[in-house]
Image (tube, rainbow, N blue to C red; front, top):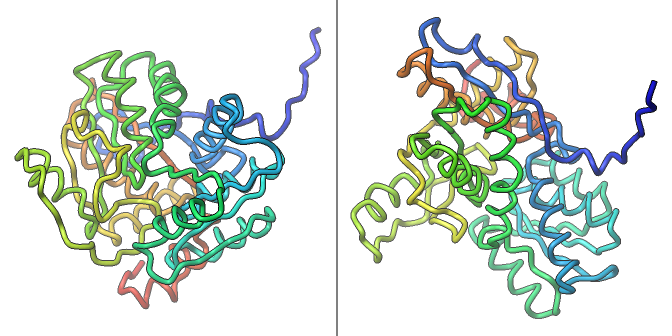
Length: 327
């Protein structure tokens, strides 16, 4: 009998399981599956880009042990860079906004990264850019870094294709950097151009408007005012990022905070899945999609991160009542 060699915890990134969410759709709907990205070591899919970017930058000689890395993040990417950066010998500074949950903030601090919380949530990316530029630090710039979508093109896309035996017909995903949906969709469409890609956008995000009124109408000067606030973290944006490739998006749908959060609680009740708000948003959008299709279709979505990161928000009854969301 051959001996199974143990692996290091940080090497367990990727190859997450695909679970069946058939209980969420009608009997005659499409099959609905979800990738459990919350099972990555840092409890989110962002471990993938942290590992990939650090490895590529180190191989290119652009960073070395002891260097300082600045990461603008709504939370999860900061957690992932703090986790892997510590192991690999880098000093990590994470810049986020007040919208970032206290659980994610404490996760970052526990990993000994320096955390800077910027008052104006729309400026935390610019703050990080200036901080890196003025001090000669390496800026991750996940929103515009081409290694972000490349990560998912080389990892998540192939995993989904293999786990569905090439039978996937729809990929449904939200985005904030949009690296995941862009990279994954690019791979899947190269395998089968008939696969449809649906971007799930929070109700008060602006990406829906940019897609239908800017990109779709070839209006290069299209501009939408800054979006209104919404609860779901790590989803939506006030304007497109350089990682977002609209050409591979077939449709954009709007999802409310209420529908996303109630879906999170339904996932916990029916499947024992404790996941974050973006996961609820994804599943709700995927459910709507699946119920318009036939049993021959296969819809895949992503469970982006763990609900443990949002116990003070999405799973706190007082917080939900204050935001007029009744369970």
